[in-house]
Image (cartoon, rainbow, N blue to C red):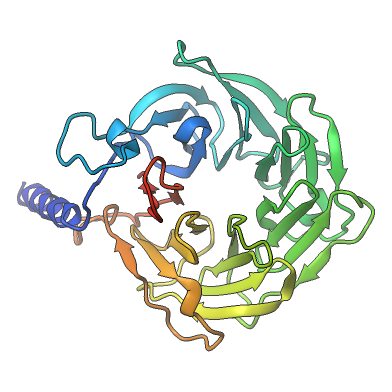
Length: 367
């Protein structure tokens, strides 16, 4: 009883301290843990569960009106996210992407590398409908697929679990558009479209590979990560295309807390190399995430080591390998010790500021 009372008091104090850090804080309480949080059409937010037992919710959340207002409105009703529509998946959802300019969502997760396609219904419905499945070649025994979407030429999904299984598929027709010419069975950690002709692939060991969709038979251009312990696992985040098209950095984050910046034009050359000051390294890259802020030049967020999100300004980084100091630490998902019985991890994503003026970015973190 005393333990329960102590935990409740610590949790209340922790919440009060967290609230003091923000001018505005908008929340949504999930009923189950999530490892995905993605922006969808119309500034909606999608989250999904990943339990092996099935019955995982896929939810599309509607931001509160106050978040989209141009002026701070202080305390007022309807300050939290609301469920707009949803669905249930009988598979764990490890990845979720909205297909730009459509009402489609693509998800992936164990036990294989197939994809599931969903359609968000019209505004008068609260249902996300399952549409189809996209099977991958040689799917048996493959890890779950990493995915990216684009609608430059048609609604495409880039997917694969290993370098030799990378494909691009037209979402609606399920027609194969591209298959990478690689014999390597290196496991992938992230994939991304740079534009309608180019894709960037990141292996779990940190190697980057560039794929030209127009030349499916051409070998992948590869670049290894700068020095780091060989047992570390890596994730990737690509900066959004800005007004300065001459530079577009790629961030690679390791399970040991190392961060490497490279340019997509010269992936073999390092722009910066730093160490994140997390209290302990991650046992793997399963929950790690690095994401760039579209409205804050040079800023990125790192999460997945614990219940915190660290925001960094990369513009003053160099290649010294020194420890980087975050400009902000979000602690709203860190369980108060000593009552936390499990490590807390939180996915994080940046928004482009909705209707807010200036270089304001909204950070959405859902636990």
